[in-house]
Every structure is written in structure tokens, then in C-alpha cells.
Length: 93
Image 1 (cartoon, one colour):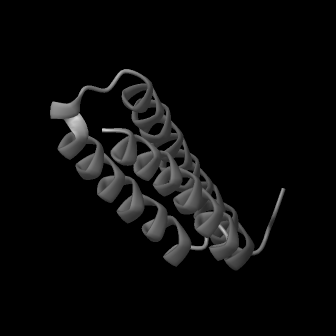
Image 2 (cartoon, helix red, strand yellow):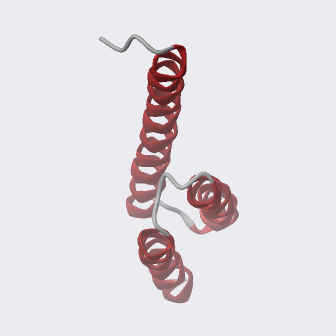
């Protein structure tokens, strides 16, 4: 166990950040699952809903990049994958 005051504070801060990062990662994964589910079960009236969900996902992913939870390349891959799915659906209508 740490004895220095600064070490104890670092441990508390890193634990707080770990929990915050875990919550944001979990929220992003949940949103991705919901988005992909809606992509599979879409109708032509829900295309606007998909776009709103995609924009919401983009903002969450960008927040994760600014907080250094995700690397920018991972975020770019995720956004590309999700966008590709959206345009695949949009072009089939």
C-alpha cells in the first residue's frame, strides 16, 4: 500500500478515471449494439432514426477520443464501419 500522500491521491484518481472510462466504453458498446440491431430491423420510415443514432454514436466516440479512452485510429475504424452500414441501407431503399 502506498504511504506518500501524493501516491494515495494518484491511486484514488486513477481508480476514479478507470471507472469513468469503463462506463463510457460500456455506453458506446451498448449504443453500437442498438444501432446494429436497428440496422437489421429497419423500415423506410426509420432511416431518419438511424441517422440520429449514428450522429449520437459519433459524438460519444469523439468524446472518448478527446478523453483518450479510444485511440483516434480505432475511433476512425468504428465510425467508418457504422457509416458503411448506414449507406448500405440508405442505398437499398
